[in-house]
Image (cartoon, rainbow, N blue to C red):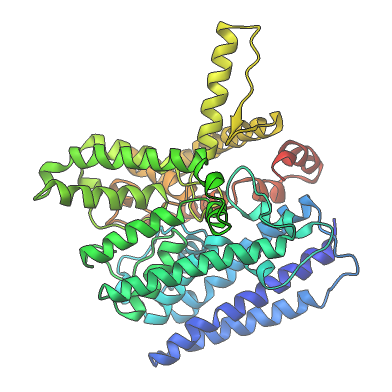
Length: 489
């Protein structure tokens, strides 16, 4: 294990976080807020720790896949631990565990919150809270690679694969650092475009920037207690469109920019993603028609909530917890499905769902036609057995973590729906669940132990389980675990 290289990259990561924290510091100065001291104190700690780690610069800069797993896992943990400090130092979230819950929820783009009154926070804290979504959406290590190459021997690609959501990550161009730069340019361009459209729709600059951060990262932290309900229909519709766009694999946008329209349009995942979303929107709109003045209004709110939940953003214009049972069950279903691989969205991912369904169909055909040979394809390409096994392994571990988390959280003795959907919402990085943790609820009433479990679930969901599993596995088991998940990396 190249420990010096791991420490070196973690040091750069903390220095990068210190630089990013200058933005909320400037916001606090603009608004004349005393919490500027909290940001400055955190920046000093980040720089001091980062400098110490960077001083361990190694001679060998090679990073292998297992190093990428460790760096990503440790990096996100450290980033969250330091990112919680401004909330804690300022006293706006006086309990450090609650501050950590909020920070992890921000960086993992979950959007779950322990706050009962969002508007009580200072402007700069609200900015930092939303900015963590934007940082975590594409991945901070991907951002670092967009700025400078970190490793040799293909190490940058290992970092991208370990941090990027989905069953597979490929380079758009020969160099991983250039791939990262392209991804962030697309990400930034879409974010800026949304900001300008929201400004045109009547939002203030502060609101348009923070809401765009939450949309781009598919996070869902708002700056008002009413989330998005208080804004105009135009702004709500704009956010709906951008939530859908940020839930699409960013490789598709690259193909469109390269004018490879045929390749972009043949994506099975994107068409399945849009088909599931549109079907859910129509059925729910019909189901809630009587709750609104017109079908168009029902369709508007259905489209917003379905796109918000399926892309795991978590914004709300209505309390879907009050909708009929059919609509609630459909919402629960799209929560689990999630967005596309390679997007900023969470969840199981549409690509995994497709692979699982195709594999199940192949096994059914084998039972009825034992001698038949059925090849599973995805976007016209044959899927390797390693990819299929990896998908099943991921799904199995996902279910086991879900079951274990539900058992622990059930110790709080909340109702069944609250217990189950709180785990679904955090493990899939969605934010709101149902009942106590619905669109108008929060996670403040959960116990210390449950919050730790839900924090872990948020990190496991964002990093797709394997990096954290590898990090905390006993040393003798690391080789076995790595060999099982090698196909992804």
